Amino acid sequence: MEEIILKLKQQIIEQLNLEDITPEDIDTNAPLFGEGLGLDSIDALEITLILEKEYGIRFANPADAKLVFYSIATLAEYIEKNGK
Image (cartoon, rainbow, N blue to C red; front, side, top):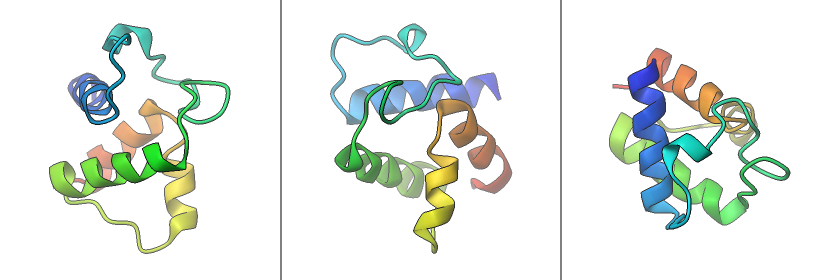
């Protein structure tokens, strides 16, 4: 699980061009949107692309994605259970 978390943090930093942030700066359990990392809906689309391209994950129901996209921890857990 730690390996997935680190890889995911690195992918998000690269994909979203978060130049001043390192994987260590991202709290694994903090919210990705709003008060936590402060991401927005465009960033959510970018993360969706990472999940599709890297892990073969697609969401049929956007409501499911909302729960999964809460934090790095929830994303990693979902990838571990559902990724290719």
